[in-house]
Length: 142
Image (tube, rainbow, N blue to C red; front, side):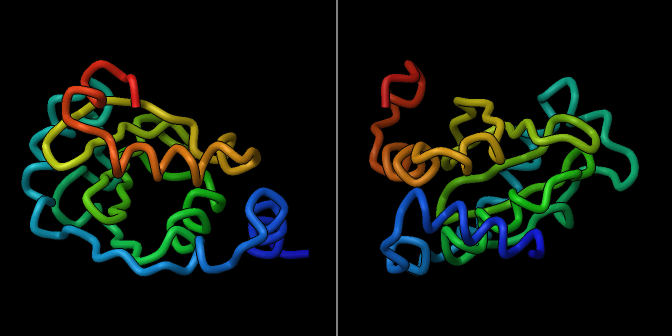
């Protein structure tokens, strides 16, 4: 079984409704310059050098399945980044899976994505974060 097949199996176990994973979201590429600035404030991300963290570091994901598949792949370079809707995930560990999370211009969380994919929490966590108020994000009460 391929890595992709493993990912699909886990996602289906945790949420059998394929519509949840395939719902389209428009990635907010217009926020990339904001996210680069926020990322460079992070002591680990600003040290990214191979490749450097910049506007070219981002991959836009239009569905939750696409985002989950990228996260499942693992072993990401420091500063690799994904966009899903108005969320940004920037890897903080070279070869790792620890992601700084930003919604719009609010830096509010750090997650271990692949561990979340192995549980029901990933889909629900994304839904809560997308619906949360600015205050809830800042207080981590979403």
